Image: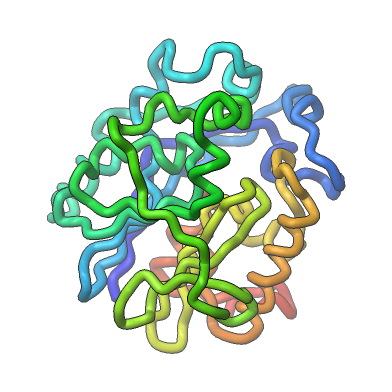
Length: 282
């Protein structure tokens, strides 16, 4: 099964956002007080060529995010904690065309969570079925969603995604899941922590699982260390999620692919699996 990494620009955040430093409670003040910045991190989306239809996982960012007025003006995070660089030709629509596909060819678009760097390209898919978790949608709506750092004002007109509740039984160490494909080889699994409704996509390719992990962690090493990010509303829940991912990798060959890890593209290209027992790749 062919899986493509699509980089839709880059992002920089404060260093304590990817790594919360072991703190048990989220603190935006601590994150925003950081004087430094990370280097430029990739904003990755994914294309899965499946026999039942093309699947896009996350839509990456839009070039509109670099223009004045795109972000909620009163939210301190957007003024103090985020920098993005996205050109129009880096958006997911043009990149799909360069791969030989059109956005209208995409059957499913799965959104891990509705932060703008994962959902900014939704407008490229007016005819695809958009799928996300019910909680991800509910937590991102309206004024409360804006206060949490989402941008529902930029969702496409009439945005009405298919909402999943993870009622298909266990997938490995995940006690609940949803099957996306009729063949039962693409699973949506709940990975809450970074946001309450966050999900990841497990693609089974033979014995190997490709885990398209969104922001379950920012890097593979942080997953292996079980370290929550600095903006998680429930850091302990994040750690529980990372423990489940470690267990999955112990049970089956797993290629771990979070969206902002600079090494994710290389791991995908070589199908490099991870062993949580040693922290080494196989």
